Image (tube, rainbow, N blue to C red; front, side, top):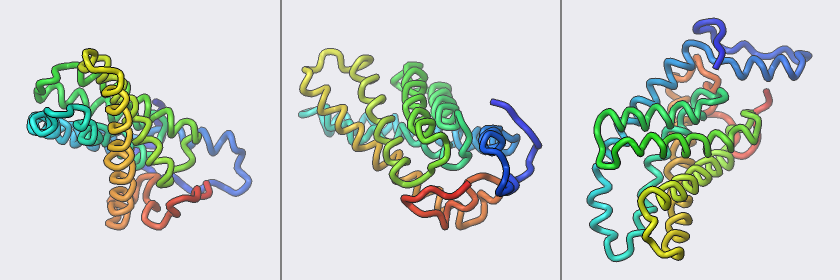
Length: 222
């Protein structure tokens, strides 16, 4: 990532500014972006740790059909979409998901340091979706898609790491359920959460400061 002026809010682009200049400006990380992304990642890392502790009870409840546990998995995808929707800089989804996984690993989890591998794959998946829209669309459908694709990445990774012995049909059901969980918990929840945060004014120095009034489906003009 590259940085420019420490805490200066993004100034509106001049109407006649070249597209390349506007794109370069939106790609630069400022100090405030790094600080906020790090706080979001560390906070969600603690949430991940608690979420992993709760998985013990989920595993017991779903012992008769273990793939149902996929419905719980979206909580581990929250950091990527939330960080990207708040900071709105290239790399934010990957950075936040990966740092959150590292924090979870340091706090200690029965999944061990494999959570870092999971965080990397899930962060890359969410990042891919925001990159596909050139970091210019922060709408609800894009957030839902990012959560769903991250869910697929989670399901695929866990099928390799933990569920190799499962039948193929169980693994496919698990993929569908992790994607569905990602759509809700890592797509809808962070998108509406960022809108709520924007209403409080705490995002005033970030690119997402106008999120509260943005259309759910239409791109905000740059």
